[in-house]
Image (spheres, rainbow, N blue to C red):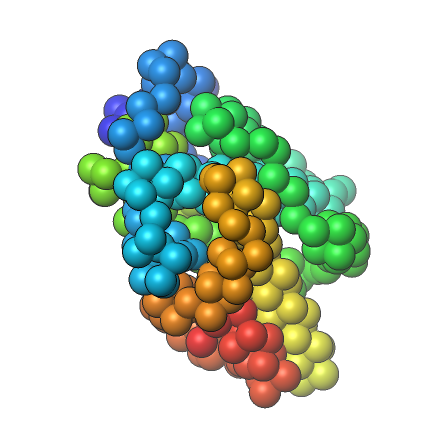
Length: 304
């Protein structure tokens, strides 16, 4: 695992007692530089998986049982690279949402300073994910065109609790699976390091997203709350269903049509997604964001 590297500079002493101030202090004490913390130089060892096998979209299917050990490992490497590529796509959306939110606000405010710190984290994460996917021997996976265009609209129009709760959804789903991967000795070491870095730094981002969601909802009326509940659910559906590209199967040397069909009906993978989102769903319910229309999209994405 990577060792911690504090990026503390001038003026990083104890800050205010608010969430943003505490997160700034935490970031100064424990952050990472992926360019030096991750082992980029050692050649890829194909005796390792790219992700915990249990998180594969085919794990538990008849097709998985027919695959050789080498094929399973190649599939998990391609799937891990696809998740990383989707992470980059959403991190770019996230950065624009936050920049729009803090535009023209007081840069001396701790909330604005934390938001800029989070954007800096996401820039490093995107580079880290891109280099990791390339080292796994994968192409640059992209979401389908419809998802890309929906993302373009979302990053332009979303605001308040819709923006921050959608950020939380993406980060929470990744967090649970990556906690499994970073502890799994079957996963190639450099991917475990990448996951460790992301989990540590994203834990601060999730605290901020939860806090901002609560704050924005405090001033939201019933109609706005219901509309945003649906927007968040649609965003969650698009994000989760875009994580593993349909192209991973062909790139792993599998029959893509059969793999897609079995992945689509894989109850094990659906159960893994639901378990990863239990805490998230409790939070959304407590915030009044699990309306009937929203629940329909969460069920379609197998998040509840």
